[in-house]
Amino acid sequence: MAATMRLQKYLARAGVASRRSSEELIRDGRVRVDGEVVTVLGTKVDPDASTVEVDGRAVRLEPPRWIMLHKPPGCLSTRSDPEGRPTIYDLIDADLASLFHVGRLDYMSEGLLLLTNEGAVAERLLHPRNRVLRRYEVTVAGPVAKGVGGRLLNGVELEDGPARVEAFDVLPGGRGDEVVLELSLREGRNREIRRLMEAVGLTIHSLKRVAFGPLELRDLPRGAWRPLEPGEVYRLRELNRNE
Image (tube, rainbow, N blue to C red):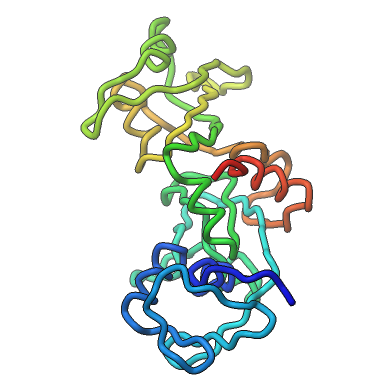
């Protein structure tokens, strides 16, 4: 007999919703286990033997899946867009459509984006207390004043509170009057880098996420994706081993 699993974790693993949203489904009486409505959080199910339904539809546990996508600029981190703009789900195979994106990149940003059906792990990776490092290459209009790095490292006041970078460096390879910066952050606030750059008087020409936690984008082409290797998934889970 397989080990039992909490119902909300089962739903998240099955790709129904995130763990938090799965808890709402349970509270709302939309989930049945072996024909009975279940509203108690923490109810245990046997993944091999229990019959789980959401809104009358059978839900089966899928094996864990993780992919890395190189999101291009001009693409939304969402499932659909009423304006018809391209989304990240236009770039991946149809059998991956149930995967959740782990955080997001804004419309004109590009770079590393993870998608998975392990909602509970994804939520922990994104939780502020876990301070998972993200690294970016940011091309700005030069010149960059000498004290900008110090200001960003010490912290800049934004409308939703102070923000700071963990690391700041100037990379070679800027074209013309452009300067390429490498920034590392441990937060994932909405448009945080763009707001930081504006606060220190810099104009962004392009923004690319090149690393998330232990994973690096490397040479994955724009618009392409690949499954994560077992060792990469293990390293992601290790970030949450004390959770």
